Length: 330
Image (cartoon, rainbow, N blue to C red; front, side):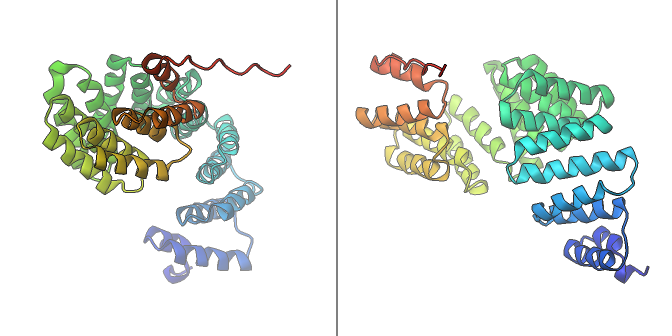
């Protein structure tokens, strides 16, 4: 097969759409093997054609393949199922893949899937630890385990794994950002925290959390000018991301710029109306303005959507008792 008609050559050259057409032409004239179908499915996935990719990954599993190939077909399907929001189906496919061949990457993907569906629980931690038992240098497992311990405020353990991820990949922007956040919890390490967050920005200027964490660090030091500069940068790189607008809006509202703060918080609500976070911070904004009834409505909405602090805030600030949980049906 010459290069002009070789789908693998087209894929290697970065011509995904041409490679897909060549694979389809090849499949129309001959029975292709499982490896061809997996590569074809991966190209469809790369182009965002996830329903077709799932069908191709499943078709690949009908071909005679070794264990590694069947495992890849399941993990590939899981990626597209997750993109379509079918997290339960993605989890089942990942578990089938791991049952055939436990690989660090697949175990880490399963951990992330569990986190997305159930939160940072012990099963996710065990998946990440198992990934590291197979490959102690798998940087994504170290990063996610660092995030797991950060969520639980076990900052020393978090710092260990995040530093290890950076040692393995010195341009790991996300790991620098989370490490900077952890270090910044100690006021005596504020300079080190800002340095790490600046490294994260240099590694990936479009990663919004680096900007948000750095803005928060400047705010803690009462450097409002640089804090606002970083919040503006976060919104610039993440214009359609709720968290960029809600953190900037809360900063503005808290520091007295209620008009612009309210605009940002309303933008956050428009971007994520079903999230508890913008409702919670918009309630705080309304409370600062003395609009108590509006604050109560927004905080009740945050509580209904599951915000862990909303009920306590209502109880403490407004002397409104937290609502008792609804009794379970018999």
